[in-house]
Image (tube, rainbow, N blue to C red; front, top):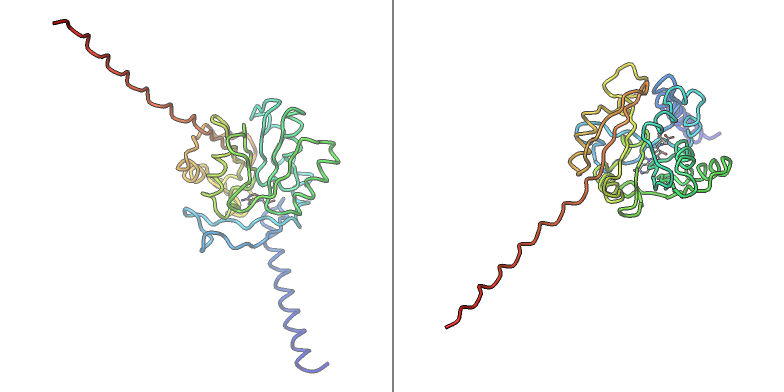
Length: 264
Ligand SMILES: C[S@@+](CC[C@H](N)C(=O)[O-])C[C@H]1O[C@@H](n2cnc3c(N)ncnc32)[C@H](O)[C@@H]1O
């Protein structure tokens, strides 16, 4: 082999080795977590938003991790959804749906008269979601390919928007939240499920966790009202916001009656 080509092979092996090591360290973010990440340029140049580091988007190549056996104990998805008391017939969205772990559960809960709009940035995730929905014989999920700043949801139509383990990955959180607010009906709820940033024992990388205070600091200025944070899950906050009713129009002043005409 000519010397130049041999050198090229050595350089190439070093690069491949380094990439494999990076994948290993990012995927070992926690004991239960084998999570592959896709590095995307955040909208925010330095990758920060309101004092926190925006996490890399989880790659579709690691989607198996979202269906790991231990997830049911770790995250208790049915108990989490029970607590939200979602009525049958509701119009709900699963933003950042991944391969449909919650979308399918939501679809069963809202029933045939309800619908689940399942958005994700990655077409591969939506492909897996379709396959999983077909296998679960669920027909009321509409997959939607979203963009970083637009979840592509209809305006004023949603009773509930769920984001499980997604918000901390949004590269343009304010744009995403504004579109979400538009999409909710007045009184409609936004539910963010996030690993607790306050708890060092939660075995997840810091940028994949959020504190309640940080979430409120980011969401409330958008005009969504904080309702409550449910804290019964082992590792996650379930943080509920609602879209306020539009302000009532000010009552119009009654026209003053003309003074009665006096004769003379
Ligand atoms: C950690 S996965 C969680 C998936 C799913 N919610 C679950 O709990 O199984 C995060 C997903 O959010 C998606 N995502 C990240 N930012 C998004 C955005 N701004 N809009 C829609 N999807 C987004 C990613 O593509 C990825 O599929």
